[in-house]
Picture 1 (cartoon, protein in one colour):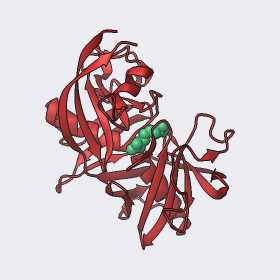
Picture 2: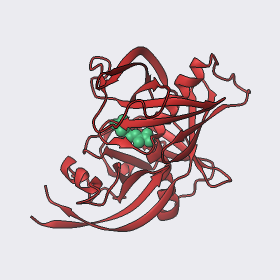
Picture 3: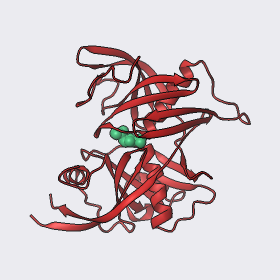
Length: 289
Ligand SMILES: N[C@@H](CCC[C@H](N)C(=O)O)C(=O)O
């Protein structure tokens, strides 16, 4: 077996951590396999992370999502889960990606930084206090559903944030017990799997959740999950989307890895806000398949 030397940058958003792989001109890593992604995310045998983000220009890859976004965005976030599967979106990943572009690729975020994803173009903005917000667009609440862990079952709200979520309100964050494997879910409602959030209320406009991510297991945070949780909660609170010109409705969303905020600015826009930091860089010795 031979190894390829692959530069990487490691970063996280509220401890949802990613291995970023610079491949700006698309020549080095177009053939990255699921097994190689799983190795990169392995916390003992590899680098370690909840996911891998390949950083590539939209005009340097033939991924259909990047091709479709070429007029609007220079950069494509090619996101993979820790098991090597491809996901449509990663909210915290977009924030870490924006941090990378500004600090490592010389990108000027003034006026908003467009990022192409498999769920369309998302615009990141840097706040005065050093956090990064990303407009994830609209989310849709679909039919009620159910999830279970062992003998316990809960009603859940199906929320589509570009990727699939099941939001479960519980009395206590420990109610679901250890999450070593995915909660059971309705495979008709979620033919491609689901991210499951267990949520408690902490106070007015303030919630906390644990998450089991499709393809990555229990993680310390999930940005799209925070948006799904916020939307399910705000609707359960009987509120409606702010009309144009009204101020945003903002909820604080705590996760095991820190604190996020989600602002509902109008029917079409949920903005995920929180810290994003780059913590290391190096060279991975990527095994061949
Ligand atoms: N951690 C992410 C979500 C990553 C994708 C997810 N596991 C999926 O398969 O849909 C986030 O911050 O949104």
